[in-house]
Image (cartoon, rainbow, N blue to C red):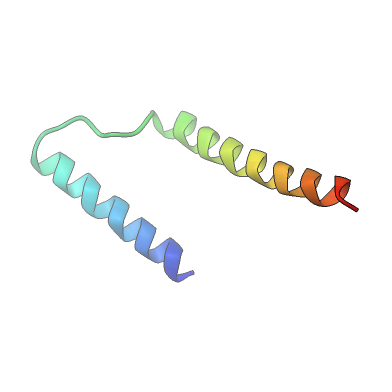
Length: 56
């Protein structure tokens, strides 16, 4: 939980800095970004599951 809080705070601060400097946000559109993150997470978990399943 501490890691999630730190990551959220860091992202918030980066967003503030980019807005202050009038730079474009360094992220894909909201839904596409979330879908990409979920896909990465699911791929990582699938790999862990396959390694555990096939190394019996």
